[in-house]
Image 1 (tube, rainbow, N blue to C red):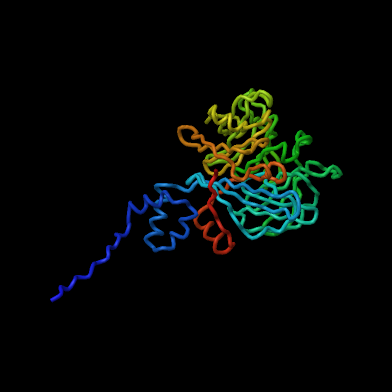
Image 2 (cartoon, rainbow, N blue to C red):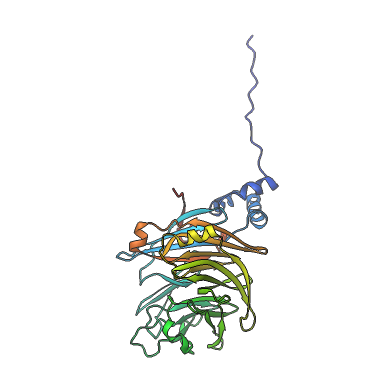
Length: 378
């Protein structure tokens, strides 16, 4: 009689739960956690716990490139320092109005004589349309402060007031004129000469070459200052940014032809008179910051939370990142994935920093029809 074989039981892998699951999820890129969060309630809870305790979300560096000829195609690259991944973000085309610009990390805009469009959500999913300011401008500073968009300076030569300031109310959708910028800024009232930061419900404007700073209060529609934000006499160019805990000053020391180093200070006080040095860029990072430039005349800064991204506008091929911690700064560098020979010659580059969360990614994918593809650098 033939022996009856017992059926072989299939091996079933044990499900992953608890600390083990959270540890595994801490190594997964943020964009891949979006579909993972749909697996089950336990996975959603594990992802939430992992992001809170093991591998916290970090602000993204977002680099937009725009062609300078029709059809003015816009390409978006994003870098997530949490996973050290570059991504290409494919999205529905943005209707062209004019050159894409940003003078502050929280707002991207396009301005023409007849239209004004701007976006301030983390992934630029929603664009708002408004009539243009009353005064025509070519290179203004533009920033979102509360529920108002402030547009200052950068006027055309034929305008009567080169220091004109206007404020657009998001609620009433109307423009209002404000006190003009301080007269001393007349020769530098353009985004190329000024650095701005929004902090404490005000916009701070710093003249890069001198450190001379003023603040604008949207409630009173008036300017205050001046403040001296050049903490070290060796600094020949400075920029400001808002981070968790206040304002920082980034200073280039030496001169444009004999550049020495980059330092950062936290500034505080009613008159912005207190400056505490929080970090100096390591020598090997300084060399990467300079790149192939024959001189360094300025620094571009994008910051959010406790992250600061710096690059040399003359050679943006490498971005220096700095994470501000209790005991100083943690420095690093990353090759700019958006920069190539074509970008340097025929495209406009706009660099920003955004706090991108799971909800932002989920909305971009499901509502905005965005697609995120990890880009592997050679």
